[in-house]
Image 1 (cartoon, rainbow, N blue to C red):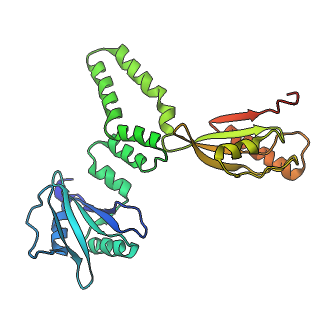
Image 2: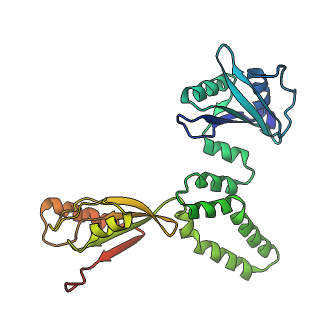
Image 3: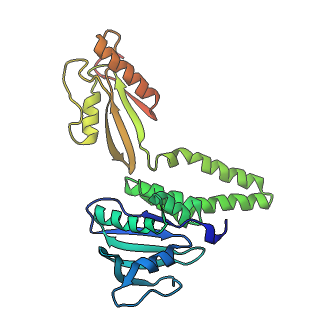
Length: 282
């Protein structure tokens, strides 16, 4: 498929909501000509025949109904990549997207738009993950990845192989494998199950770590019958704590269901923290 046959895409790059501004991305061979057709400069006159990277204009988009926008040219090669900065209300964004779709542009998600406009697939995926980061520590690691840390590591391994340095390449792969499990938790929490016999302090521990009363605490055994989760950051990492039913052999039918759920949750967890009452024999 040559450049002229490629589709031209539009995506909303900002979260939906009652925001002051929104950003629409346009990318593809027909992006510039479509924008020239719909956009009118505030100072008068039409846009130039060809886009110039780094330029921006204030004007309006629409026909009988218009919105005041700022148009910017992000890049011109290999295909025009433009941004339209408009008012951020949901209906305004929907109105503008429909205008462009009527001109033949295809709607895609902001994630797919990043993949289409970024020449480095690893950088694009890191940028998408960065939007899901929940702590400064994980955001910092993902930002480093977005700026090329993983790509540089892979290039170093490839260069070692090209030089015949297999030991160095194997060491590089070993290091990447070592950090694979950490990478999985940059956007997904570590799942930690708090388990143990009834009344050993499981719910109290979860409440203390959470900083508020997330779980009901009572002296009556079997108070916790369902899996109660709460998320918090520990040392910069997202952790999901799960308070579970106390484990004992003599339990009524309803409590027994809670115990089975506790075992199933523990089996799928990254870590199971088994609590003991230090004042009683194990």
